[in-house]
Length: 320
Image 1 (cartoon, rainbow, N blue to C red):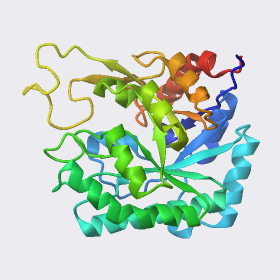
Image 2: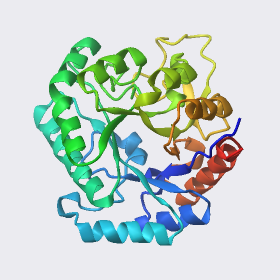
Image 3: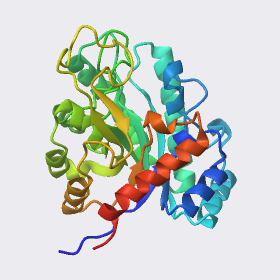
């Protein structure tokens, strides 16, 4: 059976200190075909330890213009990159503080406005979680909040998509900070917003015990983007998943460590094959969060991490 190529891109966050032109130059010189462009404002819910996981390569979105969009696209193409696969603003859109929530929604709409000017057809975010509500209550809240946001994206020629990262430790005293983390919740999300879509990341499913191959088969019609990040499961025999001595805050919580693709427990050959079986037409975008490559703290190390990731993914993404 002939296998179609799956383009490999990168999420620009770890290269936050660089300009978009510098990021595009690096990407083009190293064979990346698309950029997933970070678009966070300076104000964010991320704590100090998570500062390495936000960036802004679009500039001031309140003043973003068609001229700026055209210049960005031209610079990206000149660098040998085909284009932008998505804009990325992953924030808590169900924040309990309504003023905070409104700030996030306003910025998300600005990102969507920019996507129209850039000709980009997907914007990624988190559903998030209201801290004072249980998951089912949050799903009800989602149904009140998100139809208007999804419609706003649709009316601007793009789709709003969610990543399935649980964001454990993001919400104080709650392990799960993003309700769009599992198939059961996806069903409720897509029932409330049929036009919403999914940016799937298999690494989060590995440590949760969710079959990512089955998820791709079951939700292939909703998947428009995919993240390439690996995960190495850690030995938690002595404590189990909910051991009392595990950290209450922060990612991993003693369960796993982020890794570049090919250095963890994701079977990339099977994942890319099942994407193809589902007629996937999107990009596999490297999301570098492996602490060994120091995202945003050491640009040269981050560049090396991206290069290693692409080399490891290429055998599974090439046409055959």
